[in-house]
Image 1 (tube, rainbow, N blue to C red):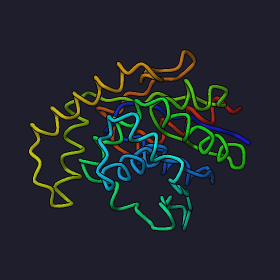
Image 2 (cartoon, rainbow, N blue to C red; image 1 turned 30 degrees about the horizontal axis):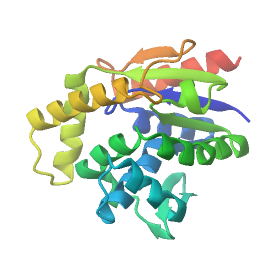
Image 3 (cartoon, one colour; image 1 turned 30 degrees about the vertical axis):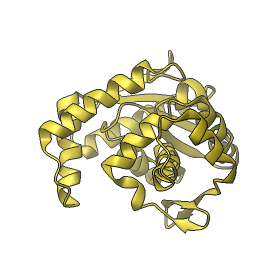
Image 4 (tube, rainbow, N blue to C red; image 1 turned 60 degrees about the vertical axis):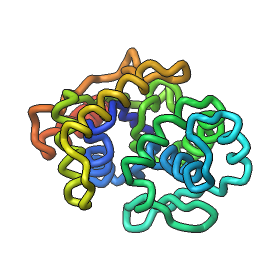
Length: 221
């Protein structure tokens, strides 16, 4: 099986571009961020602080988490309930970043991610795919963009959903999350030593997807 790792900060366009590249290649797209979102969502639903290590750890054994693909779209199920829409709020995004810093959560989800890669040709995106989850991935890409560009993209997404967040608030949240993700003790956000860095700031979506596809095809030749 072939595995492609795409890492990068929040709002860099990893999910959109990885999904398009996977479709073009006929691979399974795995959004690992959605898995952490599901854990963060479960904690919030049960009134557990995402930063409460002991509380979150007690939650994990009973967490029936399942990934399912329908028409090339990844769905996340908790105890058989599809929560794919519910995990896309700013509050859950913040909770996901916090639970992702907990070693118990990363250990709990590691095998789920690796099992999918053993069973399918995958493009998997996240924060530590090339450095920790799939260190032997066939291709590693680090997709980035300026904080301002990433915040503007996220702000437009939230506007389309009717969220009240301002651009300034989204930018501040983006910078805070960048710091938290890159400074956490466990699997901090950073490019793998053998990753190819692609800056998506000044390119169109199609140009960025083509850059990713060219990188993948060039490395697999």
